Amino acid sequence: MTAHRILVLGGDGVGPEVTAQAVRVAQWLIARCGIPLELVEAPYGMSAWQAHGAILPDPTLAAVRNADAILFGAIGDYPGVPVEIRRAGSVLRLRRELGLFANLRPVRYWSPLSASCPLRAEVAGGTDIAIVRENTGGLYFGTPRGTTTLADGRRESVNTLRYASDEIERVARFAFELARTRGGRLCSVDKSNVLENGVLWRQTVTALHAREYADVALSHMLVDNCAMQLVRDPRQFDVIVTENMFGDILSDGAGAIAGSLGMLPSASLGAVDAAGHRPALYEPVHGSAPDIAGKGLANPIGAILSLALLLRHSAGVPDVAAMLEAAVEGALSGGARTADIAAPGEPVIGTVAMGDAVLAALEAALRARG
Ligand code: IPM
Ligand code: MG
Image (cartoon, rainbow, N blue to C red; front, top):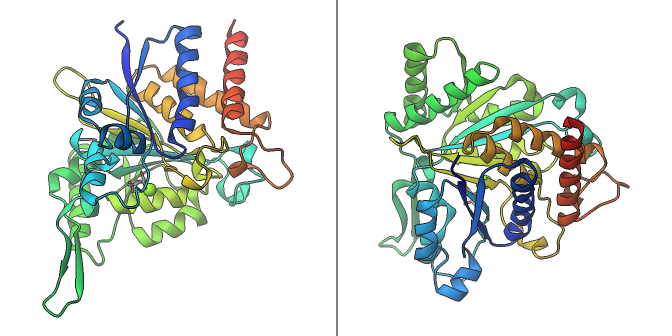
């Protein structure tokens, strides 16, 4: 089996710290389980901007195109850096250039975190949702966009929510396929009571359902109602599919179910090409968190669970992914808590110690297997 080439882009803020723990886990899987992964790092982010004059230097972009999968940390805000330079290096450009149209954000309830989860166990216990966020269109990328000065001196900004039906269909198809591998239910989220694009979204998903996915139970929900339902009764959801910015907002909100945004992983996936390869980028949802960067405090679980998604969706070893997810749960059951997931009075550990706890749980799992 040829090795799976993973490009590691730590990026900014807490990105390098949390990614380093995912890399340790990957190295453990290579050494102890013989998983054929090959890890390469490349400069990306503020440090690349300072050293090479670009957030995403050309050699890094070439490596991105050459990799089987990308393990991504975080990208910062860059106050003072011109907007064109920021855009040229942003993760949004990577998502768009690689055609990563489906952003999968699994959200689950973690029983060991019941004391720190803001939602009661009676409400959220057992929740297991896959949010599929459209990732290369909609309000984030639609044109026209920009800011102009009007004749009377007022400034005006425009962004556009635009989707063609084929863009809606391909992400809906991804979500239907995913639903078939899980609970068999898909909730499509839109704003069809106000936006024409929401009407097209709903019509397109409905037509695809009738044509090809009648075995999946499809429902529709307005996005404002969905925001409420996610905290009121999150167990009602299996797979959710929605527009780019709606998915951005709903997935942060859903982070509360997992106890902390620091727990959430994501996978950005493209179409499978003729050679059977699917471009993919894996990143924790939390972002660069500049307030705690460099202090060794950040929760690396979002990054470690992103590696688990890589193992499942790129490396084709779902059993190893499940073992890693179980090890994370084991570490939490054993009391490992970074500050973001600690209940009052619980002892807090740092980023590296959380990595240690997950590795210890993996070792224990391997020994138990014999
Ligand atoms: C996310 C983040 C990004 C987004 C930012 C950092 C551009 O919030 O991945 O959810 O808005 O997509
Ligand atoms: Mg976001």
